[in-house]
Length: 347
Image (cartoon, rainbow, N blue to C red; front, side, top):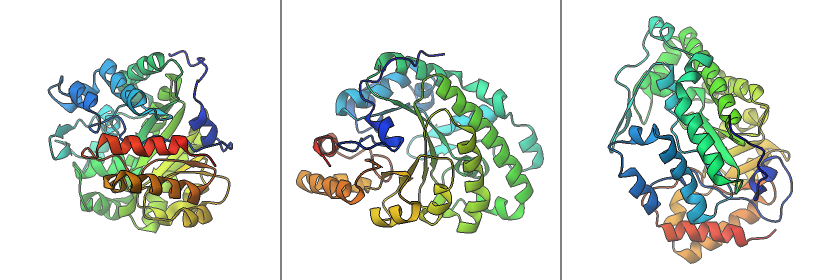
């Protein structure tokens, strides 16, 4: 286990995540440890594939820290992948260049589910992630907080059934309609594994947990309540050691339900206004994100103006981020302008 007693030099992100007032909002970026950084591309080139990179804790730690050095953001997020969870449960995947994840085997029957590991047994299979957290925490030396994350159960379920990325995830949704009992059984196992996994991440240095429900927006409100919010709620109820952020991309319709969970921060995509988001979640919760990543393709003057407008629209209890991850062809100078504008801003 890591020594988490090192005092944070910059605790702005955690203070705001807990609802405290501040003189400016904190900023970090989804996919900040990635291809927008030339030093990341150089590190990645040393490995034959993404998975080999992922399984090397020292390299994952280096990638995690690179944006802290380069951009000066207010939080680090451990370099990993949401699909390490299904792999640990017994469903390995390949990362195919320019295509994305591909699962040679998918879940189709009750027997397939029965053969999976789950809970603590599956969490045991992700020691390389915990080691990356320990190394990162040691190397950060308290500069900024460290975020741990996992995919929300519905998103993990979608990949385990579909076997790859999809615009519709029709196979996964078909399974919900045709096999609701088996769907709940699989979601329960994913949830148990995720809880065990996240608790190990916290024990090894994570200061905040973020749940990514990347495919939330393809479910109906009724399906989301039944097959997604319920299981996110179980995770939020189980994780009491650190703050939790829930980011359900595209699920603007579920904001009130998410706000009722035991989470402290709600992540937003760019399909809702700050005023509407605040009205729907109430005054107590912290909001995160909301800027369209494509906004960073604009000229620097426009980026500055847009960042300032967003911060003014949200006011306090806001963590600046994008509405999704950085795209790899966004210019680094544009990202730097965005970050620097936020850090210079004062309420």
